[in-house]
Amino acid sequence: MIRFSITGQLKSGKNNMGITRSGKHYPRPEWARWRDDVVDQLRAQDKRRQAIDAPCSIVVSYTAGDRIRRDVPGILDAMFHCFERADIIADDRWFVNVKWLSYYEAGKPRASIRIY
Image: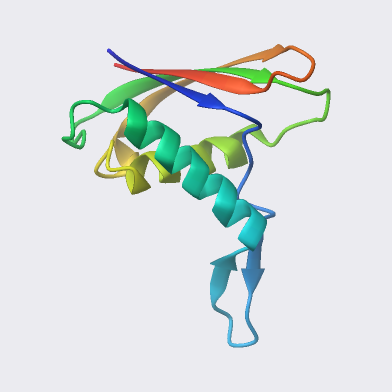
């Protein structure tokens, strides 16, 4: 088992993408800063330095800091891409079993992640 924690509000990538006139998609600057921060947090915690390249399970214990309704599939997708970008997993297709647990604590958003 490998453990990670992410501090701050998790974001969905779905509504944080822009599109050019030619149809090219790009991340909005605020979302790109969030993504880069999460990638930095993950890399700082990863002592293995070898990407997972086999099927695995992931359990996300998410604590929201407010009562706003969240897009869980969008958050998972954005988070999986962060794990890829941080070279923790070779391809997010390897996350074959996913468990999401939601909690609430005012003003203290965070996520605790376990990969098996």
